[in-house]
Length: 184
Image (cartoon, rainbow, N blue to C red; front, side):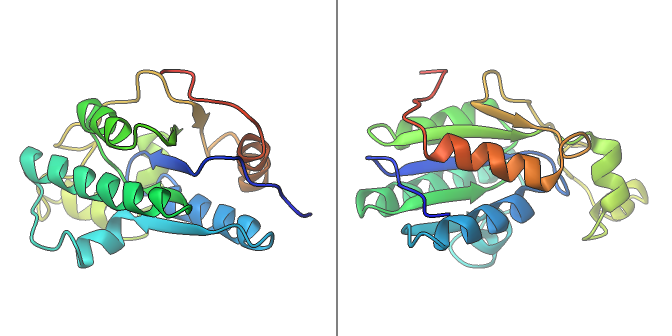
């Protein structure tokens, strides 16, 4: 399938708890778009914390700054004609709103990967939930640090209900549409 990109660069901001499936969705969606030679970059929250954001901790201020930096990089990429998929917990609504404002002038879509915490904890690919429950890890989003569900996400995917293929089909349909954010 050869996809036609939308006229303006888009940023898909995938938010959700650790283990929700954000990175998996981002990678698979990127692979679909790459087949049509669509210029694209994934900004993964974990990777950003290993480089550009490695000086940040997990205080509320540091989490806000992490989200802001990711949004600034997305803006730079959008300004160069690249589409961006951000996979970042970005736990606070005010920070996601800030990201949307930073990306003003480009198409920004908030995607809530709304997987329940019980499913995320069962996956626990990084061992974070087990460490948090044992007291070894403090400040895990959804356990002892807040996660504010999006107020008005453009897309909402519960990976407990929808298959990855269903999610990717919906994202692909959305990407090729002329839609704008429903929460502008």
